[in-house]
Image (cartoon, rainbow, N blue to C red; front, side, top):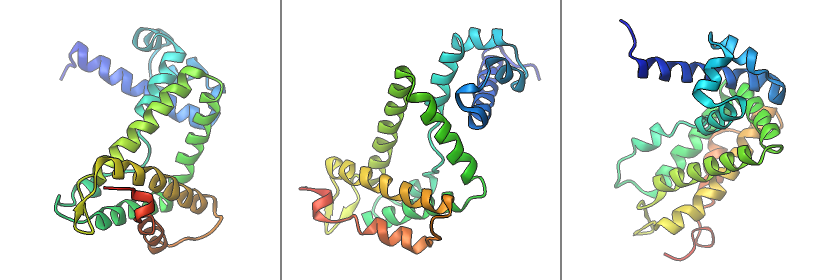
Length: 203
């Protein structure tokens, strides 16, 4: 079946974003526009037409990258379930991510992205926006959950989401690098230990 113009444009964008991610993961800032276009099965003209050039493609690639964590299992937890159950599920997802055979490839891509953004203010701003959006998304999964007989407020959810992400990202990084062989239960116990009045703040 023949694609419409809009469908073809979307498919070409997806192909270029995937190709950019693959080559940036391997070569970092040295990834050539010509090689990205070739890997996508397109021309450099398509890059300029769809993204305005390499810089625009890099911005879109970072904007497109939501991170490796799948929040679907968290979203399946019924609204009436407590905060601790949600944090438990998030911790287990981070553990699964760190134990995935592709984890090292994802880590390398993130390192390459750091290389890109530290030398480009526009890319850095885009990455910061993405990180803030991710923390907001995570906080949204925590807000309203029951804790000690009270619903978690939006402010409390944000206060918990930031250290929770930092803690679990650090544990996952150590596992991927082989620093230690932490267990799934250790991820959960460490995450649950953050649920304290000092971290959550006032209701």
